Image 1 (cartoon, one colour):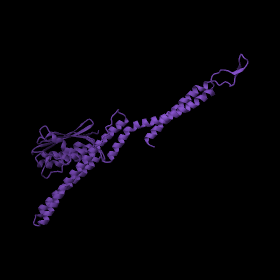
Image 2 (spheres, helix red, strand yellow):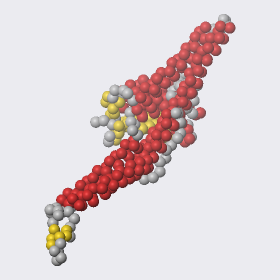
Image 3 (cartoon, one colour):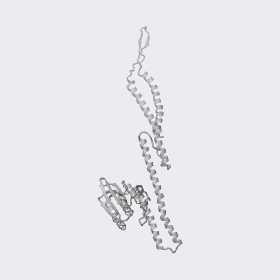
Image 4 (tube, helix red, strand yellow):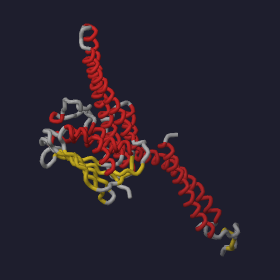
Length: 364
């Protein structure tokens, strides 16, 4: 049976039960107190003939008069309950029909449809708003994945196309320098491997199914700075790590990659040379904070939000050296921060460059 029919039968059943209880109450508290004297009592009249006495109705009289009317009332309650219950159930389940239609449209691939149910704030309205919010998030995630897949395929096609072109040229020109060919093939292959590893890390970091351990961001920052110090010295960049212990809970590997990406980006995007990179950690109550700031050219405010998008490097941030990257550095950072229930804030530095602030839930 449908839910509407079940509700209709339930309404009619409760209405019939109420009617039966009401009639039983009338019988128990009224009819049983009616006296039932012996029938056929006669009294003499002045003319000497016998006629029946004028008397009050007995219990049997009232029962014979009451029972047919009670049966008619119960039949009316049954019909009225079924008809009224069917109408009321239809009106009450109308919002559910809207939600069901939206679910069918979403199942067919249409994620742009919204219910936008009107009326008072009841359970159906809350369910409708939650479903609209879910559809909006799904549409955003699907669009992001489609855009990411398109960008990833384009980025992976570039090094593969370069490798094929170089091999075709070498096949047609046997006199070409083999060492130069091998070096260029190695660079293209390295770029493809780096891009693949970055895509895998981006996917794994977004799932959030990692083992959480206690991690000190200050220790990770010192390790990242020590690892990247030769790169900073090569570019004549001053690299400073300051602050205090900042404990958080998460994946040590992913958090280490997050800090390394931030510090490396701050170094390689520090133009012109002879700049500075500052890494600072601190704890504020139940929040652990990591700040990475570098010097450089002032960044346009409209460029800042695009830096966390995959493969969006920005005009002022494109590099052509050995650290050209794959355009996933800050996108990976953003994914790792979200997987650890944190926030990532990007802001132009007061004297140029970029100020990156990561806030993660702290642990004692």
